[in-house]
Image 1: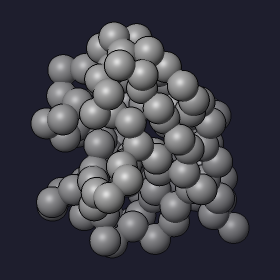
Image 2: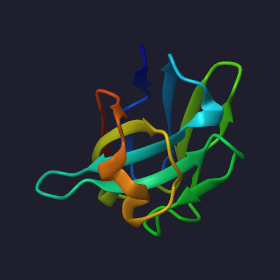
Image 3: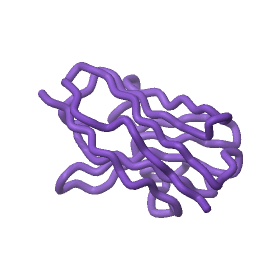
Image 4: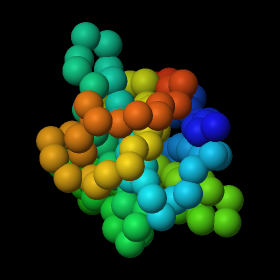
Length: 126
């Protein structure tokens, strides 16, 4: 059974860095796209980054482009989201999600994602 378990959220200072982890089980990386999404209070959920398991490509939203990386570990079946130079605008609940598909489309096609983690709160103090 597919399960996504997130960790790494918490309170961080603006200008600092964070690393979120998404451990996936019950799926084969090669068959899935793994996305990071976030939702701030009163805001729509938005795509942050996406990892294409088929070829290892990563993609980033403009909001974090240049500040984020998305390394992955196929052995551990885990993907990460690293953001540096954190801003207060990065405050949100962060979710990882998986789908059989690609990273294409608006917000990396978030409406098509089948499996979701529980979400982890990231709060950036200004």
